Length: 520
Image (cartoon, rainbow, N blue to C red):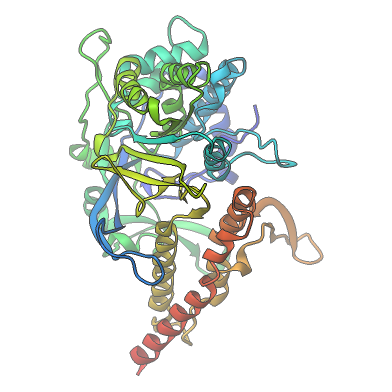
């Protein structure tokens, strides 16, 4: 087994930070020893709530001259993410690697092995190298529609209710043993399993307040910029953690001496797996996504058989908790009921009714393949099929406008951050660190580049590493345009991002104007 699983995190947590230079050897030895893991005590997870604004077109609003409807702000969407400590994260990553290989091995001779596509390395057979991404997975679904335009089609988009929060512990335990091919979990696997179903956590804000006056920060040693040391410092606000280079909230012994009252456990673990089902695992650990795929094995198999091995000739794909099913309109009711029934029977979950959308497409009298979402038993063409970040209207595939909106919001935040630091007294000019911004948000940073690192033994002072800069959002759009061009027949997606360059310079100009005013 290679060391792909050995990934060092940089976010502040409980305990001294780990580094690949000093700690790699002992961590590898510790983690790969099953006896160590069987006795390992996991540190409480760090809980963070992420919120995101959602802009959505108003349903009955008229379109403007560009075909767009007025958009309104919906309630913020909240996601609860849990971060393990640095050592625990590596342990989860190692066991995720083991389970992924077992899962892929289990599916290798199963016909339904291709329907679950998220968090997997599935080789792209149409490229010289590399794996498929959500671009190729979305293309496969749209391509099925394109090849069946002679049929009256229904497309069912469904979402599992609170997926990670509702995973049944007994089913997870059963499927874990299934892919390992064992009657009982080995002691080390059982310890990892127990840490997830019996997860304990602390809220990030509460932990910050408790140790705010003595956070662990990393600084260069006085008169020696080649070495760093850890110091204690007060930080006024939690969003300054990165700027102050905070590497830990506290040390392990400090936490267990001063802050155990912050530990929470909403779902206590029970060894009696035959009692009433316990539910939920934390979302955000390196092993969570792998377990989600393992958990859904029975449902995926049943749906594959119903779609691909029956005369109904339907299509099914699952990306984590997002499902897409394409069938004849005459079979629409059958498959809607099947999804809702089997998700409960096979995996004890529920489909989120308000997020289940049905679209219908067919050839009209002018031989145009058109359609839209079903509302009140009528087709509403204002709302078209959306899947994995793309929109399809029966003719063309485009990137969702929400993707661009998020991109522009992130761009503006980066400019504001640059302006904040440019205002600092020790910054001699109004520099916004433009090179970094151009690379991150324009085509100038879109190409994949090998990263060169400082090397005192090299003549040039730099040597090539094994790391790559993978590009930016423009790189993603260029790839999407290339893949979807098979269906679009033109550069539809390229046309969508032609305004990015102008938008970038509008934000840049506006930010510099604000800087000049603030410096007066």
